[in-house]
Image (cartoon, rainbow, N blue to C red; front, top):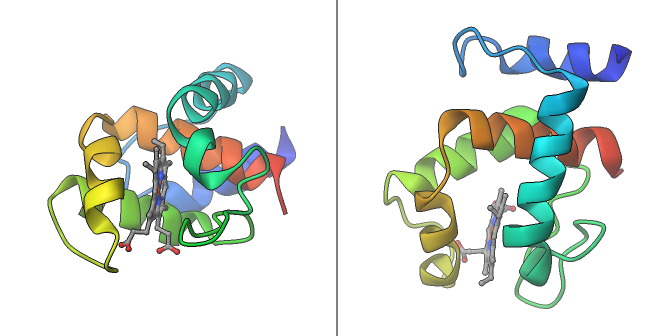
Length: 105
Ligand code: HEC
C-alpha cells in the first residue's frame, strides 16, 4: 500500500484526517464502476467530450470534483458532470481519486 499512502499524503489538508486503506480504494472502485465508468471509460481514459482522468494528479481530480459539487462551471459540458459530483461525500471523492490514481496511468 505504498502508493496509497503517498496519495493519502497528497490529499491531506484538503480532506482533513482521511486515511486511505485498501478498503477505501475498493469502495472507490465500486463507486467509479457504478457512477463514472459509463462516461469516463473502464480505464478512465475518457472518450470524445468526456475527459480522461487517468494520469491527472490527485489534487487536481479532488479539486475538480469538489468544485463541480459546489456548482462551479468549467467546460461546456459541465451540466453532464455536475449532477454526478453533487451526490459525492468527501470520503467518496477521496476513495474515487485514490482508486483512479492507484489503478490507471
Ligand atoms: C454523464 C457523463 C458523466 C458521468 C456519469 C461522470 N462524468 Fe465526469 N465529466 C463528464 C464531462 C462531460 C466532463 C467535462 C465537463 C465540462 O465541460 O466541464 C467531466 C469532467 C470530470 C472531471 C474534470 C476533468 C478535467 O480534466 O478537468 C472529473 C475529475 C470528473 N469528471 C470525474 C468524474 C467522476 C469521479 C465521476 C463519477 C462520480 C464522473 N466524473 C461521472 C461526464 C461525466
